[in-house]
Amino acid sequence: MVNVKNNARFLATDRHIEAAALRLMDRADGPQVSITAICKEAGINRSTFYEHFTGIEDMVDAMQEYLFADLRETFFDKRSDHSSYAPEETPLSQESFRIFLEHIREHRYFYRIALKIGRTLPLAFDAANRELYDKILIPHCAKIGFTDDNELEYFRIGLYSGISAILGRWVERDCAEDLDTITDIVVNSVPAIFLPTFARMRD
View 1 (cartoon, rainbow, N blue to C red):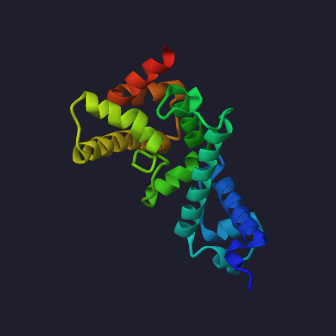
View 2 (cartoon, one colour):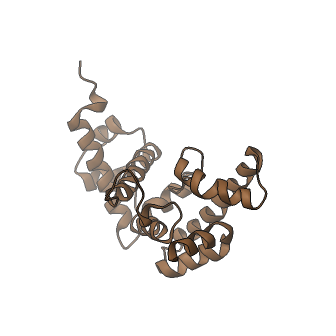
């Protein structure tokens, strides 16, 4: 028997429902994301919605996974040589951070809702992102004398919390500041990581 959750038509309907929700979120009058509104926008009935999602939060989780994957693909597509990183792909470089900010701004209504229900921005400052750990966090922490895993974890938490708080406020303000301004705010608020990285990219 075909697993319906992996059926191409089922997955296409997932994307259709999610796209309808994003359209609602992206309208100028702000996000209106009741299940009734989503069903009307998608041209489906409530039973179809519930075949795919248990509710709004479940749909937001699925959309978040989809957008995170899309963001990763955006970076990957920009790599001409898939064995090495171009400047815009270097973790926390000015080029890569701008791509990240553009993604957040484009989907700001979604992230506003995601943050309100306890989800996170697509920041990966953990050991799963070996490139970021190996190239940026570990060398920097070694320079300032943080050498064990516990100290590194404290530093990672501080970095993540600081950037998340700044960008969370930016999203709440409808991304009112332009990309250059919000970049300057982040760089000067979290200088330990960003200033050395940005300086290297300019050399």
